[in-house]
Image (cartoon, rainbow, N blue to C red):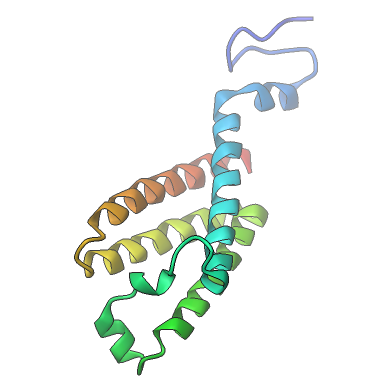
Length: 141
């Protein structure tokens, strides 16, 4: 039986073992895990407020446009995030792009609030990682 020398080497157990040993496949699963857990946790926390008061991330003028119902809007956001996380679990080829687009929308929102530019920058990194997951999903999902 041959041993794995690198991610392209063949082994006797067939392509399944080769794929699962590849660094690309491992990266796919790391990113998939992250984009299942993080959106579900963030979405659930919109209801629990254990991590942070999420309402602070909504610009005041948006809250005013919503007739003062910004908190209720954030609850809807939480539901959308939970659905997106479950979507990445079930159909990463599609939902990784949804998560990336959602993160871009969050970045735009954060750029309208002074003092949250660092969070917007972190979300840019997450959006790029979601796009990497979407690309990896084309091969491994």
